[in-house]
Length: 386
Ligand code: FE2
Image (tube, rainbow, N blue to C red; front, side):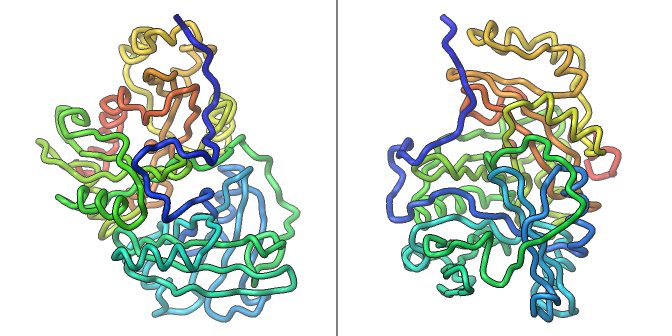
């Protein structure tokens, strides 16, 4: 019996038993990238991904050493930060890793308590609780390190009425390409080194109170040539989901190992951005020059009705249209999902994006892993890194 499915967006209720309550998270606040040229990156995210100019900090606002552009699309906020001087932590980060995610900021009720609870459980501090003020009120932020040089910043903004953070001014721009329908961050994936996945799974359990609600071993995520392992960590209300990957032995090099080699350490592999009309969003992204992985072979699309099982009758999308756009389809017991992956968005084969539309399904497209990884391997072969 087919049941009705709808887009999934989690509320604040606790849905994962076993998750600890010492670190209540309201959602993702922002994601900050350290990049070589924030002005040009901002142009790329506006033009190609449909983000809107939102806030700015730099020389004109009194900063001497860096510039940050804040862009927004629905609930998604990204910050692009570049250094104006050599030898700073930002320029050192870019020098080592290339452009990449530095901060995954989490929206909390109480940033001091979040920092205290996590550091007393073993987190390494990045920034002690700090109050920032302007005429709109105050924000408290505090940060801890997670894998590699990546940071979780806790952001408490209940006493703040401004747009973003103290120190930022509204970014007025005459150039505002339209949005492409991206709504919120569905999940963010970290790549860690050989044998380190379980260490970080335990870290998210012990330090952040998360639960491991899905696991994939190297038998499930394997192709003829390469393999990886993955465990999905979630906070109690399901709003924050961090899958963690590590490479596994295969005949050839794992894509996770390729990432670690080029990023020179663990880091964020991809951000999955949710839409409620993937056909429209992907058509628009392609028209604006976003490059996606090529589609899997015909046999993949022939098997879609079988893969959908009981959800077959509910799928409204036309399979031929999905194939034309190289969108992938998977189903689990709760419904189905549609997803697609971009090529890396910088010259190092590191960070990429996933566009996802969940029609009830809560999984991560396990049924697509093989087809996806074969596409990635074809790209790795071109780079000489398979
Ligand atoms: Fe994903």
